Image (cartoon, rainbow, N blue to C red; front, side, top):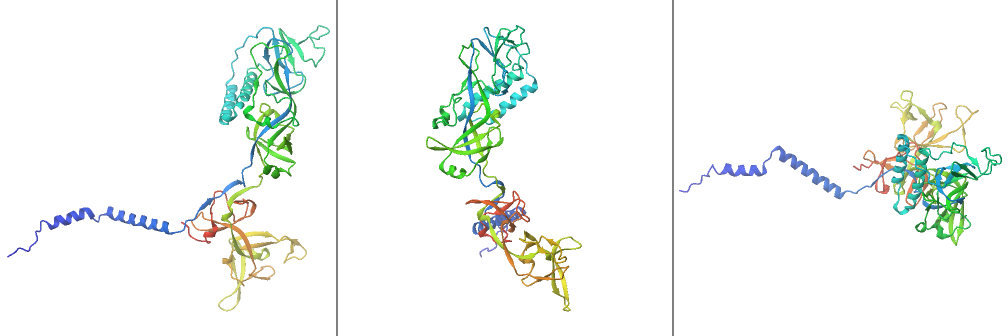
Length: 493
């Protein structure tokens, strides 16, 4: 007789293996729930429409255009009166008064004096070097020479070398031998074994030349704007000079001009301007100048005339500038974000304030269960307060005139045909008239909320809206980029 009895020792072992593989412990349950949630989220993400958001930024509608300007000024190169070794007294890039000492010549080399700079002076030099390093552009290496001359002048000033000699200067033209110059405007005097050369007029001293010193706006050519062929020569030397050698340049007029090349499109854009504000990228300073458009060899150039500020840029022949033409500032938003919404319009004379909460609202006429007339206070968000064109007569005082407004309130707060009661005159206004406001959908809280905007300026892609709009936008708000894909109060995430 066959034995149909199962082996009890094998069955528990089989189920034990199954439980070991697919056991329903707490870890497995949590993993299963997490897996189902991720699967559901992935399906929902793939099947739902995606809404792009845009973070509201602040600034102009577009960046101002930048140009490289050629500086034209009244300047001349001065030559050595005699031979000898040069000692420089005027600081590079600084103004000097007429009759101020510029340099000295001596037959022997003046021994160098070791001077220790203070920690404060060293800190200023390090600061200047750091500023230059941050703004350094390898394609404009000639700026390195300008900075070198400026730095040398600063070091001479800090070391006290550029101060005017304190010893008595003896005029070579003295008539009485007293040592006092017979002519106070004498350009050459002596100090010990040095012949001191003095400036004949006020100006800014440079110890370099670049060949543009004799040029004017009328004599500039298109080749003069080529920075690749630009060369600046350092006139400072430790070798003896000969009579007639170039020794320094002096800028004698504070008035100067910047010439900038213009395309036909830029020329049309700037044609109506007679003045313009310029930002100098070298130091971030801005100033206004007279603007005109001129032609040089058939090409259009902008000419900006200044009457100040030259001392800051005396060592620069080419200047990077920004024309400040986009002056409208506000919040920048895409045009695709803008929608319109309809509101009920209610005269401001029918608004009132709740005595307890001081909230602004309206008294709506109604009837109670007994059919008696009652009024109910309704709080409504006022999206816009538009000033009426002509002041209307006040309801409670016909002898006075007061400015009135039209309020734009959400249509959800009222029904068409509701009667709003003026508390003072008991006059009624029937809700029904509507008005349109422009706005965007703000999604800071995960759902679309209408926010009103006031457009100040716009182009083909973006608009600049006011920062001070009541119930409007603020910087860093998130809005829907494509507003036509969303409805108000849609839950987006």
